[in-house]
Length: 436
Image 1 (tube, rainbow, N blue to C red):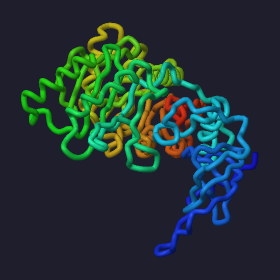
Image 2 (tube, helix red, strand yellow; image 1 turned 90 degrees about the vertical axis):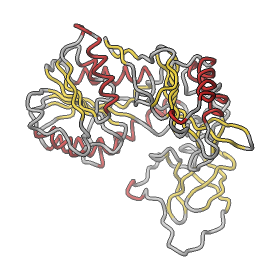
Image 3 (tube, rainbow, N blue to C red; image 1 turned 45 degrees about the vertical axis):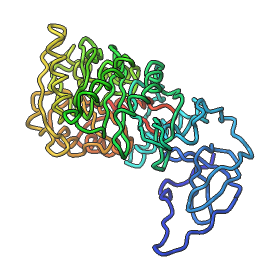
Image 4 (spheres, rainbow, N blue to C red; image 1 turned 120 degrees about the vertical axis):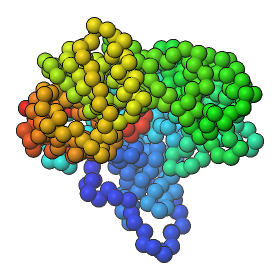
């Protein structure tokens, strides 16, 4: 199928003061899916971005401002399927439910291939995308607000600010879905007079952990409010309920097993979205570090990789969040003789990377930075005596940028594996194994 140059992919820019043309109906030939999940076609003034269309389709669309809205699919693609969710097209959580799995996963792999190609690694071999959906997502952030004097819970619509209430969500693990759909009464108790709240929900082995942002400070709640919130948490069988990181009630300590260790995450802690995704990423990371004796885990979080690596090697876990680091250390200490020595270092690695001198005693490293990557930290790894490296990334572009630094200092990419945890979204994770 015809492809178009990525150099021409920028959205059209409209001069200041220029009038916006009135929308008009056109018949569009869809060429491909762009990096953000929108279908792309060629328009008279540049590229047109059309949500919910597929490559090879012909659609009748309303066009305006460089974007198009599908009114009718005139020639459907054989890759099209019926969406799994009745909220598809309004809810901003999924963009690609209408695409069959095989071409969808191939497209995700292609995002990694093209990111590497832009950095000069066009010949790099990229593995097929691993679908790590498992039973569904165990972590979700929902929003709640008052609409027409009723409390609504759901996700923000795509490209907007309006809340789309949901009555089901096929991407969530069934137990988490069943719980979040019953959070209305709890949200009503937590909502301030104006504004909205975010309910960060995590499915743990001991139940669902709910951490609410935007509800105010726990110490400002009166006794009656605390009693009502506690009663609702009990009715929902929540493991824990927190406001902005401060627990209101903990009926059962939230726990997660990571290898031979058991971790109790702090409220709202970062976690891989699916249990199968975490296991898959960890397996790829450990494969990349095979034989290592001393490992440094950079951006370690609550120990997703550090605790598993410690089954075979001494580990230093470096992380900027004190609570997540404390949870990691407590889990390591609680594992007794099942793990080798695990030490911790609190450090904002984006501001102050671990230096090559500080890494002189390590023969392997793990790095799992934020979406923006960690170029300065990559430069320090490149100068350290690290022999094996596992780079975990949720952004192919920053991954490609950072590993270029490493390759320029003698590293070789031995394996590149895309992993899909965010089903039906444009997001893709990648694990790169490097050696020198």
